Each structure stands twice: as structure tokens, then as C-alpha cells.
Image (cartoon, rainbow, N blue to C red):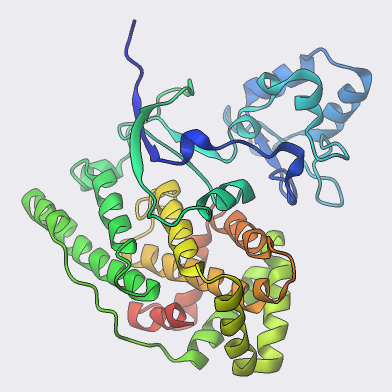
Length: 382
């Protein structure tokens, strides 16, 4: 019997389970769900009740630009809900026919399985159940190697591996360790990560494998000093969120409430929000660390699908933290529900993890004159 392949994964990954109809904001809410050619034709011919057949026929639409992996989509209704979603929150397909009949995207979400030369499994922060699980632990996220049950086909070798001497995974874990050095505030750790990316860029340009090994073994101390200019940081995020609101249904309402509060009340509202954050969520910095680490691993930072330069990848990461902080201080801390922070961050990561957010944010920041890392880091100190 052939030995199963091992995947690197966050230690929480084997424990993840879907909340099913108990989700406050379902994963199928607000966006079209991609369906492969194989799944499309299987769903067209699946034996089911007449009511479910009508739902399937209404839900499935061919994509205008089709590929075997993305051949059709399940389009949301006018209210943003999936046509296959029942009133109790469950999926009609799953409820009647079981999980095996689901399309691969629906079956796998929020899991991401990368079966290439560096096999990995992870979950996206856009799922509220993932964030709830992350926020239950104090210790830094750990990573383990375990066999995975998924039978996903092998993927082609990633071009970036040639530039990194096949050390892409090691580089990501090196950056993650930087974020987990809790002797410094989280903004200082992100800034230090930016310094590591600058050093990495120089080493990769030199094509010196030994120099890369020395860099990965180095453990430079973190500089915990530095404070940005609050007014500048708020101004950057106000402009960034105002533009992103027009592109994303997922954060629109959260962003509009935050913009309204900060534009009307400025630094007074900000200071009160900081007090509320510490009062309601004293472990917020640990939670943000977990979310950022999980995001870096899930997105394969800094060598993700967007194929960004390392400086632009860092701009995107600054924008990720800035969006988390801005929406939390501008909206979540003012809400009465205990789950407000989880809901806000899950909405943010629906934009961050499932669109070209890093590329878009980097371009917007350059257009705003904030393309230099030192100027972009103003938003780290919000």
C-alpha cells in the first residue's frame, strides 16, 4: 500500500468542522460560487426531488469565460443569498443528498489544499468558524506535517520555486516566526517583517543560495520603537476604505459605518474606540497575530497567486492590517454583540483572501503617494 503524502498544515486544521446552518453569515452569501465542468454536468443529471431540481436549474449558470476548473457558477439571488440555501441556513443539496454531491468548492471551503511540490493544507479567515477557533487559543499558531484525506490531483510546479531554490515554504515560516515574536508590539513585528522582505529581495536577486540559508538562520532583534502619525494613518485608511467600499459588497456596510464615525468625530472617536477595544477584547493583539499568521500561510505570502513584487506584497500586508484595525475600531467595538469582532474580520477576509486585494491595495497606495514602505507603515500605528 502506497504511503499517503504528508501536508504541512496549521495544527488546528484537523479539528475544523463546519457550523452548517448555525453560521451567522454563510460562506455562500453574496458571491457567485465557481463550479467545474465535471461538477456542472453531474449536478445537471443528479437524481433528486422536483423541488431541488428547480433550485439547481435556477442556480447554475455557465460562465462567460469557461475553463474545465471554472466552467459554471452558482449565482446569488437578488438578496445575496444562494438559491440552494434553505431557510434554516443549511444547503438544500447537502440536506437532501449528502455532502458527497456538493461541488468541490462547496465541499472544500474554507479549506485550501495545495498539492504541488510543497504540499499544504490550511483554512481561510473568511470563515467565522475558523476565526472563532483561532481566537480560543493564546499560544502562537503551530504547524504540523500530517497525511491529508483529500484526493486532490497533483498541481504543476510553481515557477517561483526556481527563484527561491525551492525554499518558498521555509521563507514563509521564517516570516511567520517574525510575526510571532511577542516581545514587541504587533505593528513593530510587521515593520520588522518588511525589513526581512527587503533583505530577502537582495538575496534572491544575487542568486546566492548560501546567502539565502544564512538569512533564514538569522534572528535579528525587533525594533519596538517607532510611532506613526495618527492623522496620516487615519487619512490613508479613510481613502483606501472609501475606494474599496465601491469594489466589495462584503465590507461595504462595515466600511461605511467606520468612515462615518471617523470622518464626523475624528481622533476623539478613535481614542474612545481604542479604549473600548482594550476593554472588550483585551487579547485583540494575540487574535490579530493569529489572523495574520493564518492569512500568510493560506495565501502563501509573499509568493501568492497575485505574483507581486516583494515590495508590493509588503504594501498589501500593511493594508491587510490597516483594514483589520480600521474596521475594528470604526465599527466592531461599538457593536453590542460578542461576535461583532469575528463577523467584522471574517467580512474583511472575504475581500482579502478571495480577491486580488493585495494587488489592488498596493496599486491604490502607490497612487496615493504611499508606495514607499516608510510611508505605508503609517497605517501600522493606528
